[in-house]
Length: 91
Length: 254
Image (cartoon, rainbow over all chains, first blue to last red; front, side, top):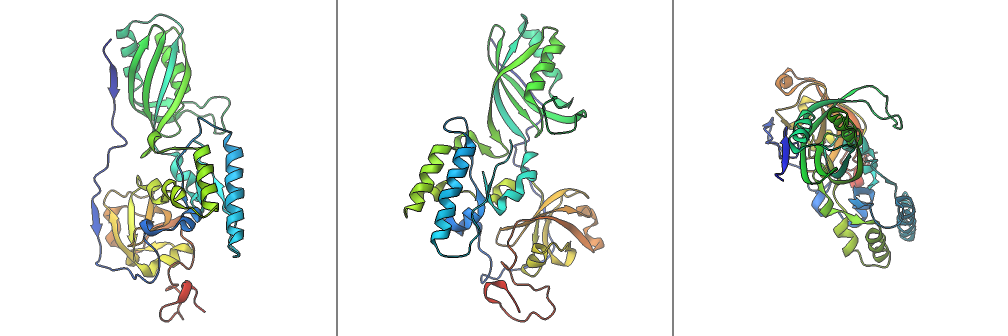
């Protein structure tokens, strides 16, 4: 049987961005941090994980376990850091 | 799984296009040509009414089916691949294809293989994540580090605006972005578009709505209305404060 395929357009295609540069500017290295230089702690406060939920325990169980372990770790540092919040994209 | 402040990106991500692989069961016998004919009618822009059991308003909504492919077929079972816009119900799509064919059809199985630029191949099982977190709590961070990703990847599909260091903290406080604070912007920006604002270091500051299209940028004034702030206040110095003078430790000025 021949493969049947119908394509309208490719939404995943890397769109060619045309960027308008308004002015020349530099950034001060004393503040902020490039994303590629973020530490695990930084990523736990602002990051994401791609989860395969098709195998294993229910996501709720593991998210709570993860929160508990991470929360305990944060408290262990002795700082007044917020407990790690985790949310799920309801895909 | 969004962590920390990244949870605020939920809305921006649900609209991403998705790829699915599934099995559709036809309720009657259909020839290949007939099936092809029916499928071709569902590619492109379609209307869908959300099912009874859904959280959204049950109004017909415009959706896009970017691609439909029959991978393999065995009698009434059809293994297919579909690429659809966010919010498209594949189950409803199968049902409607069945209606068009006259035989009826339903979706037997479905697996999401791609969301935006995120592939199934990049995913980690919950058990692996838990194990990596355990290792981290015991002092070994390598595994967890390799699993964690930068949220900037989640907004790669949005038009970009780069801002000056001096504008960053104001945006973190919800201030709109005016043209003097803009370093660069996407030529494709239209009024009302959801855009992502970045620092010159590539950090995501906030999401906002374009107050004017790229063509009208030279008019001046407010360019982007800040909507969802992602960056923590104080990451960059509060240049917006009149009495601010000089560099600041930890970004907090008196």
